[in-house]
Length: 581
Ligand code: ADP
Ligand code: MG
Image (cartoon, rainbow, N blue to C red):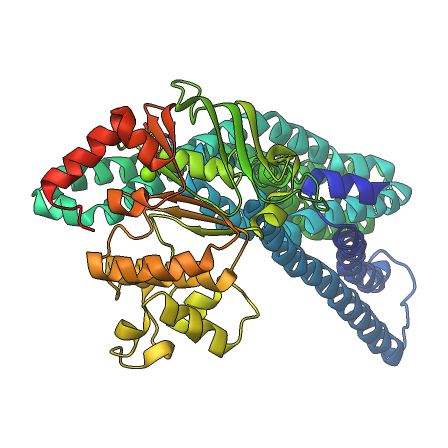
């Protein structure tokens, strides 16, 4: 039952939550074992005071005494060891799992999730929040709950010993906790403000780093720096303010706790004068007060930390609980025709990017998307691979509505080459192998040859083993595109999407690659987007997109005779000399 609460409340796994409970129990035992020396002190005191008060001299065997000390030390050690084991094991395995989970979920989320989210925000959630939560689980929660449990047990003992002094000692505890709970609102507000400012700062930093060349070349540095300085000093202020808000509650609580000692002394002296308790009892309570407040003070600090982490847990839960539209994993396809039926789409609810798109890209044919820039060609190709779902209408592959299929599974059917090639800081070999994880070196090299990569790879210092830098910065645009094409050739999927795949290539390389691609596309569904009309003219079908609408579609020859947008675009390129056969 408690276990389920932890799972829900803190987003732990079953095992993690069970371990956390064990950790808490051992923390309580550890705290209680720290109180054991009080028994020993009391015994010493008793031996010392009794004769003074006219009693008999108590004779205790030194050996027994040392034995007791050793036993107590042993107990403290054993509990501390266990506590350490459970608490830290839970913490670090849990936080590893949490990170992996978040990463996994991010991978499966629909791309639309990232469209309206901040990368800085996501990074901060995965790295910083997880680290903070680590600390909460390793220290705050076990210590807080552990000290509450041990406090209850020790209080019972003290009440039995002398209930009046116990009240004088303990009345401060509930008061301090109540004060802290009341200040929870302040604390939350404070940490929200800090979060917002941190995010803003992260964004600006990122922007600055990404655009550093422009900033420098336009001599814009001073303005930019002063903007950054403004934001960082704003963070400084909000941090100080939030810490103040948080510590106000904690400090008040601690001050009140210390009032407890005062009330024990005052009330105890009064009771002694009236002869109602012995000096001995009072001394025992004073010793207890020296030991008992320490864990409580820690508990207060930790409570503040726990209250502050709510926002962080909420943020990671938001990612974990995102509906992952898995859809069907098992499905039969009737061929690989891609059909758009009355598809409307927008990115931001404001302006329709696609309106009423209807066309079929048939298997065994090359379907070319053409039209002015911003017309929606890339968007159509992304919808075809279910990067997004249409706002209305339906995109289907082999008769299956894409919106009902599992994204990951679906993508196995696609070889995609987009304008913006993503390369990893690894060897060329591994970068091509991304297309098919289990491909042999020979397969990779064959694909690289087909994609005309061989020629430039040979010139690299270490050939296929050359590491190509962050996002392939050591390569030219055309080389990057060829690697990306090699990937697609290697994957050899049933549907091929080429979005300006050859735009950075010169005409000679382009026609070579065209040849390679044409061997690849037999009996496959190919959607191609290209600037150069000569690439398009050999297509089986052309779909002309203008301002998000299909304005013409059909065989290239038919369209030329229709004298529409396609014909005009062809004529323009012929004039500019880019059109040669
Ligand atoms: P094309 O590939 O024909 O140049 P796109 O499909 O890239 O056209 O873009 C179509 C329209 O959608 C453009 O107005 C563009 O600004 C907008 N657009 C493209 N991608 C996004 C995006 N990720 N978020 C918001 N708007 C976008
Ligand atoms: Mg485009």
